[in-house]
Amino acid sequence: GDGTVNAVLNHLAHTPVRLGVVPAGTANDLARHMGIPSDVKEACARIRAGRARRLDLLDINGRFYVTAGGLGVVTETAIGVNRIKALGSWCRSLVRPLGSLIYVLYSLRLLLGRALPVHDLEVTIDDEPRGRFRSTAVFVHNQPTIARRVLACPDARNDDGYLGVCLVTRSGRLRSLLTVVRMTLNGSHVSSRSVRMWSGRRVEIQSPTLKTFIGDGEVLAHSGHLRIQVVPAALEVID
Image (cartoon, rainbow, N blue to C red; front, top):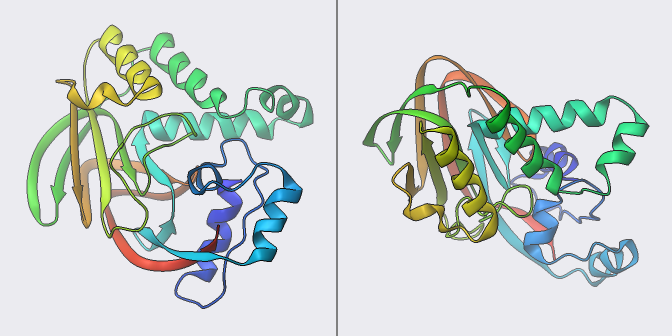
């Protein structure tokens, strides 16, 4: 899965060693985006063929990730799903048929179940201040999707030297639900008044309190000052 990919790529970055991926996780965001088959034999055949391409990585406070990440609801969803899978094989057997849909369902549960924590954030893109926001979620992406089907940053690409940022400001429960639905269906949330979209080579997110940031579905940073920047062509992946 993407968590295993993350553990490996943090050792392979800036080396001539190629990464081959056999999708076996819940979301398989990298494999899906690169068109790697879900069938094990077909994925292995791709690896044997050996055609590869170089991808950018995103550096978050000294740790790399390759797909998508963020904080707020993004973090709570990833951590919550990982806790469910860690409960035992019977929970994993329940999660497996749902696949990546489990992430969407969990985020909807968060939105419906209680008042969401609001994060006071100051955002800077490429050294240009973008303002202070009261936010429920921030996505920082190297590709369009997270959890396979959530199109948070439709224009993000993993080989163009830029990252995509989607910040969701505090809003009512109904508007928040609508934002998640629009992200999941077609990415039309980008026109919402409660959403801010940016792209750049680096983003800084500052907060008066510590924030937990996930990337590739794993916790990568816990800080009040998050620095995310593109590292161009840092990883060679067999596709």
